[in-house]
Each structure stands twice: as C-alpha cells, then as structure tokens.
Image 1: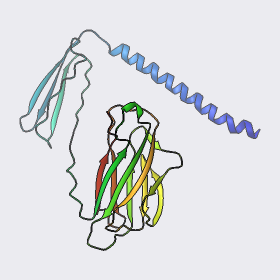
Image 2: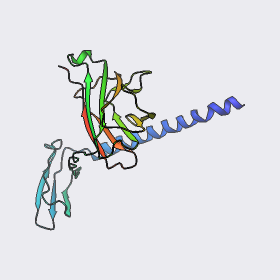
Image 3: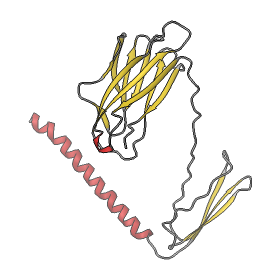
Image 4: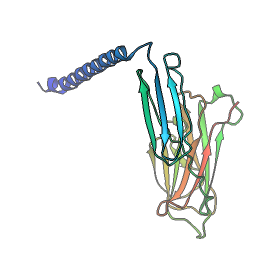
Length: 233
C-alpha cells in the first residue's frame, strides 16, 4: 500500500498536466480558426501628448511584416488606437545601456585563456587564468570574492574546481548560478592567479564573453570587472 501511494500521486499529476495541455492547444486552435481571415484591414495610430504621431496600415498582404518607429519622447505618455476589422499585435520595447563602470582604484584583474592557437572545432577544454591583485591604499585588502561566469555551453571540468597558483588563504569556493565564486581571506599588492578548467558540454555559435568580478566582501563598491572569451580561428 505504501509503494502504491508513493508512485500513484505523480502519475495522477502527470495525467492532469497532460489534459490541461490538450485543452489549451484545442483552445488555441479554435482561436486561430476564428481569427484567421484573408480580408480586413486596420489602421493603428500612435500619438503622444507633445505632438508625436505615427500611423500604421495593416492588411492581409503585409500581415507578416514588422512595422516599427522610434519613439523620440522618452520618457513620455503615448496613446495607442486601432480601427478596422483584423487582428493586430502591438508591442513597445525600451532599450537602454548601462554606463561603463569607473576604473577601479582598489583591485586590478586580467583574464587569459588557453589554448591560443586553435580552431573552433578543437576547443573542447579551456583553461582560464584570472590574475588579481589589490591596488588600494592599505597593505592588504579585506576578504575578497572572485566571481567568474562561465562561457555558454561550458562547465567546470570534473574534479578541477578553482585553485590558486600562488599560496594565499582561501576561505571557500562555491558554485553560483552560471559560474563559480572563490572567497579569499585577503589580497596584497602581489598578483595572484586563479585557475579554472572548463569543458565544452554544448557547442554554441557566436559565443558571448564570460565575466569576472572581483570585489571587497565588506565594501562591494570596491570592485573590478573584466571579460574573457575563447579566441580561435
């Protein structure tokens, strides 16, 4: 009876989930059938309180065409109106850039990767060298955290973890969401090198850089940032 109770509940939940999915798909299919039409046109107007105005014509001929316009009044309030007899999807997107961080006066960080002379098909394993040092006014720093985000498609090699080439008290290491963190009791003005060994688990095209952040545990505003990537031809 105990074994039956243990396995019966997940199976029951799985059936309920499957039924809900089927009902949802049926609803979407009926909605598509009702809204699909080769006729009808619509006009979408976008206006602002300060005089901005733009009109979009939507018809069966251009139904798959993305029409867009830049909103020059940001921040601002806009009025959206649609007139006609067809289905229209509208979306407003806000894009912004964060300012570049100021040059750190407390830490310095440089990142290098190996191999260097390689092809994209050969990069199954990557070694990352993170060189860090304290550059502040004191002789040594407080506790320091070195956070490394891994390259997309790569994982830490089994049993390798993160290590220091030079000796220094290491409080602990831990995995983070998408990376790893190394806690150092202190850093001096002498450069220390943290080493990571990565293995490719999934091939990713247009590989984006990984990031390294070094900061004071008690004063997180004292930090330094760097990027790294695999540079192969």
